[in-house]
Structures are given as C-alpha cells and as structure tokens.
Length: 114
Length: 397
Image (cartoon, rainbow over all chains, first blue to last red; front, side):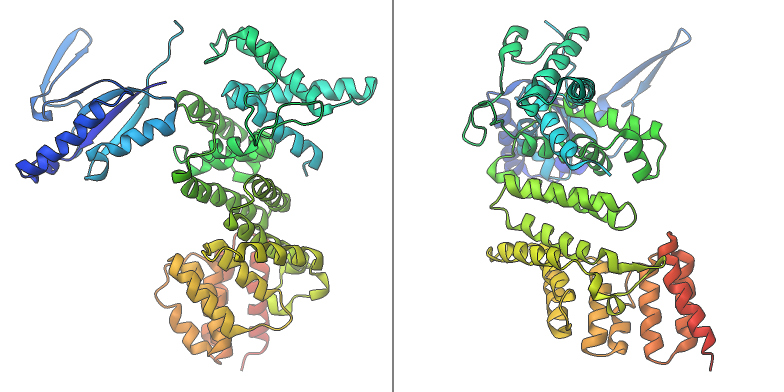
C-alpha cells in the first residue's frame, strides 16, 4: 500500500534549534528519505509563503497565506510504499516532528485498479 | 443470548475469511450467508462430516462471488488461486488443513479489531460484531444509540481497516505488549457493559478472554483479567435481590458460584507465576480477597496501594477508602475522598454517606444518600441509596 506521511511542525520547532541541532534533525529526515520504502517526498516552504486560490460563482479570490490557519502547519511530506499500517507507523515514528512538538498524519493513497 | 457453538464457529469463520480477503465487511457478509445456507441445508440433508470445513468452503465461495461482483482486486492473489486455497498460512501455529484440523486466525482478527488506529468505540463495536457475532441492532442497544448510527459506525470502522491497511497479524514482539493492553481494555469494557446491565455481555467477555488465553498462553496479564472477571461473575447472583443492589458484606454467600471462584483462583495462580504483575492481576488479587470468608482488610489496603502505583484512577482511591474505613477508621477514609474528581459518580456519594452514618453524622449521611439516588442511572443503582435514605429517616433522632 502507498501512504502519504504528512509532517506537521510547530513554528517554534525550527527557531528553537541551533545549527548543530538543525543539522541533526535534517539528517534524521534524510535517513527516512533514503529508506527503501520511501518513494518520494518534499519539504515545503513556510506557510507565510503560501497563496490560496478559490473560485466562487466565477469570481476568483486570491488570499495571501494558507487555506487553514493553525498553530501546526504542513511542513512537508513523504510518500512511502509499505506492506501495512503498522509498517507505515514505524516510519512515521522515526520522523523528528512526531516526537518534537509536531505530529505525523498518515493518509493512505487511493488505490486504483491497474 | 448467543448460542455458544454459533459464537465459536462465527468468530473462527470471520477470522479465517479476514485472513484470506483482508476485508472485515466481505468476511462478515460471507460468513452470514454461509450460516444461512447451513440453516437451510443441514436440517434437510443432515450435518456434514466436517461442519467447520463446510462453512469455510461455502463462505469462501460467497466471498469470491461478492468480490467479483464488486470487481475488486484481491491483493496478491489471483482468483484461480483463491478457489484452490485451503488456508492463507502454513506456519507452526497454523497446521496444514487436514480433514478436521483447521487453523485458528482469531488472534490476528482480535489485534486488527483493537488496532490503536481505531477509536475506542469503533474497536468495541468491531469486536462485538466480528468476534462475538452480535447483530448491528444488538450492538446499537448496548451502546444506547440508534441502529442507523451503529451501522454507520461499523461501516466506517470496517472501511478504515481496509483502506488504511490495518494488518491482520500478531504485532511484532516490540509492539505486542501495548497492543495486548488495548485488546484487554476493550474486553474489560465489554465485561463492564455486561456487569452494568446486559448480563450476557459479561459472559461474552469471559469467553473472549478464554480464547485469547488459549492463543497466547504465556501472557500472565490475560490470566489476571480472566481471574478478575470470573471472581466478579461468581458473585453475580448475590449482587442483587428483589431488584436492589446488595453490598458485599450483606451478600448471601450460598449464592456465590464456588466452582467459578475455584477457576478464578487457578487463573490467578497462573498469573502470579509472572513476577511482573499488571493492574489486572492486582485487581484479581483484591477480588480474590473479597471472595474469602473473612476479609483481611490490612492486606486489601496493601494491595490497593500497589495498584495505585500502576494507575492514578480516582475509582481505585475510592475503593481503597472503603478498605481503609475497615482497617483504620471511617474518618481516615472520609479524608481520602476529599479531593476526588468523581462528583457525578453515585457510588462516591453512597460511600461517603455510609462513612458519615458510621461516624454518627446522620444529617450529612442523608444528604449524600439523596445525592447518590439523584445521580443513579439504573433502577438497581437507585434502589440502594433510596432504601438507606428511607431507613435513616425512620430513625430520625
């Protein structure tokens, strides 16, 4: 099965880290990135760089900022191919955000017949 | 009341089908149809040589038909293979299928139903449906929700199992402790739902623990939970008389089920072989003390103190206070109840009332009994404080 691991971070998570700590955290993300189960993934720029587009009754509404304002923000994601949810949870636990104030949301991808 | 043979065969069949098709919904539908077919054929044609194998073959065909109709892909198996397949596994715990030896996949199903990725009420509903075989309507009645609501809850839970890839396997050695804890929480919730009203649910929970214990014989905590439930269940007939709750000291011991108490003690002895005692084991030790002819209050207090090291539950403190009132004094016990956050719990107030009564503070006792009566949900719970209240008013100084 394929899963998206959505990485939710808190604003303080990165600002509280010095360079050495940030490098150590990045290396843990990189380790998951090079795991054989991982098939893709990206880190996102911070939410203040987001642009939201909505079209209602033909009128376009552009807003500066993310669709949902919240304390935790989507900081990045991995796509993994794992045999089952237990295996996906084991990968999620290794992501630094899981144990450092953030959270990992595991979402199965919709399966389509080949 | 669910027929014991039905329950046993239902749970085995659903588990077997889940192992094959990885889909609780398909498994339940097919199992249901197989039992309906059995009800039609067996009375006419006589019992087949191996009823369990007959049910499996019939249900497997139904499931394959259903999957074909839904044009669903069966992961990792092509359809031709499925027709031939006797069993999904062949390891030591699942011996190859002879004429009368069929593997038991229920442990895998139990862990799937109680997966931590499912909400608690979803876990309980799935266990009641898939393992115990209650109908959606019966489960709805247990939860005091409409049948429609329960149907939605079950459908959502089964879809989550399938779409999220919740595995049908026994967790890794690293995870199995936590996972078993969740399973036992669900079993004990079902037991308490039965203890609080639907009596057959208590029997179902006991049966399920027996199954669990047979499949995981090394797990001391399962023996502990089973012992705990059996000690409670053994006193069931003595707990109420004429529609009112009878407190332990007033129970007619002739109504206690001695055989069940012996079995409980045997399970407790097994659990105590493991030096590492879980909360269930300690609770079973306490329940064992309450089943003795003379209560050793000092020992009961000591056991509660051990239990408090494992749990911070206010209920434990409340129960301990009752023992302290006997081992020391009602005053000490009353002080223990001061900071508990159980104000909505009728038993807190009836306990306080009894302590106050023993201390001679009758007006305060009356107020507490009145509060307990007000908060009680069932008639059985209401009858006890109501009667005490009437008794106290008769003896107005």
